[in-house]
Structure formats: structure tokens, C-alpha cells
Length: 392
Image 1: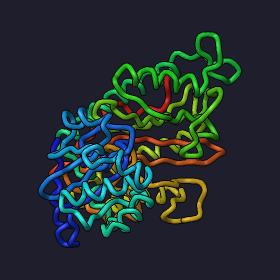
Image 2: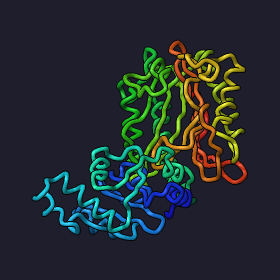
Image 3: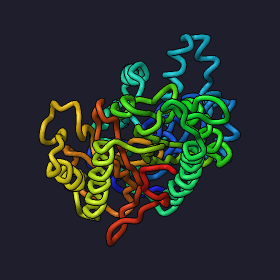
């Protein structure tokens, strides 16, 4: 995958920076994106329009030469780290090594993202290297527009996601109801048990996740409540799964809401209105539309049905109380936003979620979410999973 970094090149040129500097492990999405190298401990990437250079430990040197998307790979020993440490101490030695590395590649004025370590930045400035935060997040903007290869990575993660959603739904379908509580294989079916099935299924499909949402009843009325304890019949159960493919590092994201039994009239209305908002947002999703316009399409459905939104009432604690969606890629939440504050025009290659929802502790929560890529003439929904409320 060779990302299009022409906008980053223009930014560096216009601002008079020699390059873009990162100091982090590959868990920082920008680091992995620019370097193409997967390493847990912090390493240095210097991107310039002419070349990309890495500075790594001796431990990672051989692997970085073979795996990184870099024109040059250097190691600390190339700049006599051990000798400098004996003379100046460990931390100052590392700063001096980094300063020499930058000097070798002609970079005395660098931009970086806002997560760059403050101590490292201060140390470099003491060695007459200018370090400036890129507050407009040009690397994030580049990451937001996916290549065809990146879209395929998301698609593959989503296929695993759908397998795990199917496993969760199957548990609910096979459960029996005893005194209003779901049971499976002779024991109460809990949020934790469903999450376990989701995680095991994802592992079998080459994906992993740190956490997921299986929230029932009043828990589901809090959009990011992970859920816990026994699941109940006749109450909405929100299942929101956002895995990362372990090989590609790309995420997927998907939510379905299920009821085992008979939903209340209020919950059924929540679901029907949310499905209408979901469809309205997709109708508005196209190149040239802003994230705000897509969000407005969902809000109008809710507001016309008499439900509050944060657009109509910024202080509301019930109703539609979050944005309509967000970008997905190396991070599960990244640009572009699909919200009231997003004036970004959507363009082909943007991968976004559409996930309207309604929430009230007296009813529960309902959310429906697909993931799609904006195309030249509209969008392609990367999700192939039915939207259905009652599990029978």
C-alpha cells in the first residue's frame, strides 16, 4: 500500500518544514501509516517528500529493513548511543542521537502530530531543531482517503465482524426464556458470555478487539455502556462490534439491536424510526455532501417523529444523543466525521459508519450501524448483514 501523501508534501513545502517527524510505537496510527512498520516500542520515522527514514533499536533493525516502507533505516548504534550514554546519561544521549539522525537527513525544522512526546520535543529544541505541532492533522487527512487496498482491508475486517455478529445472534436465537431471563445450556445467558463468543469468533477469523458492547435494557440507553450481567427477554439488546484485523491493522464497525421475545410498543417505535433515520442518512451519503448534511438527514427523521436530538436540544439526555457516524481505518474512530460540526466534504475513498440511535432508560437503547465507502457516484455498503429486530 502506497498512500497518497501529496497534500502532506504541499503542507511541508508551504510551511517551510524539512519533514514530518514521529516518535511512537506502531499503535499510533500515524506512525504505522507513514512507516509501514509494526513495532510495539517507540521508534522514529522522518518523512520528507524525497524519502522516508527510520531510526530503530538494534533489536528491530533487521526486521525494519525487511518490512518497513522506508528508503533508509538507521539504528541507535550508528550514532554511538552507548558512548553518548556513558558521557551524557541515557535520556540526553537519545536526544543527541536523534538530533544527529535528523541532521544526516537535512531536517532541522520538522512538523509532527499533537501526540509527539513533549520531553523529546524540548530536547530537540535545545539542539536547535524546530519542532512544530501540525494542528490541522495532515496525516490524518491523508489516512481518511483510503486506497483500494485499504478499502479491501476494511472489507475483510467487516467480513470477520459479520461472522462474530452471527455468532452473537445465534446465541440469542438458541436461548430459552425462564422468568424473563435468557438461558443458554442451563445457565443464564449473560453479556459476558456473548462477548466471549464474539471474541473467540473474531480470533478464528484473524481479528481481535479490546472490548465490545452487548448491552441490554437500561444499560443500552447509554451508548457506550459495555453491558454486563444476564440478558432479559422482551428488552432491546445492543450489540456493537469494532474489531481490528491483526494482519492489516484495519478496523471494521457494526451494530445491530435485537430483542428475544416481544418488544414493547415504545421499543418497536424506537427501532422503526431509527431504521428510517438510517436509510435517510444513507440516501444523503454521496461525494460532495458534508458530514453535517448526512447527519442532518438522520436528525430530521427523529425530529419530525417528535424525538429530541442534540441538534434540536444540546442539553438532552434522551433521544438521538450522538453523531451519525465517523471514519474507520487504522483507528476505529478517525476522520471524516459525520456530525453536526463536520463541514468536510465527503469524497471517494472515505470510509464511514452510519449509526443513528435512540436512547431512553425507560425504554432502552436502539442503534443500527453499517460501514460504507464513498464512491464516485454514491457509496458502497461494505456491510452484508440483515437489519432485523426480533430474534426468533
